[in-house]
Image (cartoon, rainbow, N blue to C red; front, side, top):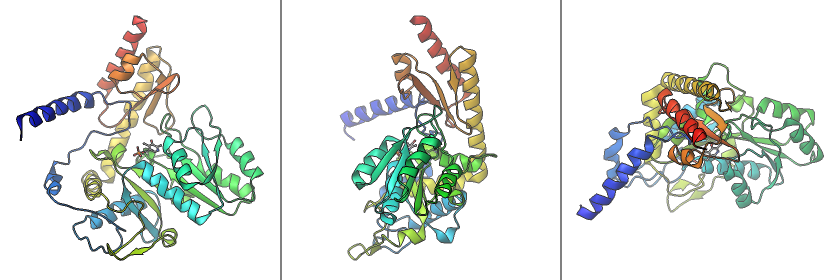
Length: 371
Ligand SMILES: *Cc1c(COP(=O)(O)O)cnc(C)c1O
């Protein structure tokens, strides 16, 4: 390696090490070790096409990818033989897949989503040219069911495509899909599709004792979960999961690559399915139960520490996202916090400890005194 190249890389690595130790504002778990997978960096692997069908491009990880999808079918309460999905480039692609599916099934449908919905959704709706209506949110970030009911009532003649937030980005709020189903039944809406954005909480709710309603048995038609959030990965990734019967509607066979073209992108990452497979296998269901329980405890500790220190803080039930009053710009930068209006949040991912929380609270207090 050229000396100058090495110098640049060493510098970047030092920056990563330093910044990584203060990553508390974004839901990215840093607690992983994929060194066993390093040899796979030496090959031109590509997961092009449908992971459930043969591909002419044989250097792939489709087999592991299918096992990842099986895991998510299980935790999302969808029988494996009725499930279809693939490993995406992240939450945005998973949301796009789900909303695309909803739009294909109900081309005239209206997409309803709350004010607290992730920014990717508005962009996706524009790309899909899907009719859509934004619904008010409650103070805690959950959708306002009265506004939803009224709005759907006025548009009762059009199919409903509901974008459910299973853990909003800013407040970790969970839309109650059983309430949404009730509203649809009450209004006698027969044509409906529910896509769930479960980027973070899709890897939390399956592991708690008393989850809010979620999963295909609760009414999901598709769901997107991130891989680089709760599972943790150096490369962004996620899964899109839906029912196999829906996918058959959009499948097109492409001769050149000998695959079934059911995914949004063509060439796809072969390493991220391998990472998710490795993490899920090594940690296992019990391992995630423990990790999630630990993170929820740290989140509860953070709420108490902030409040005891005179900084108003709270969190939604079963959420690792701790919302508190926005601190000074210096503290926001130091801890890579995501500010929004007058609030900020700390996300208790597995690498965030009680000591980390103490340090953040101390910095916030110092900032207060400095004012
Ligand atoms: C992170 C997140 C996304 C988007 O995920 P990307 O991987 O950044 O595309 C979507 N929705 C929610 C609720 C998120 O928290």
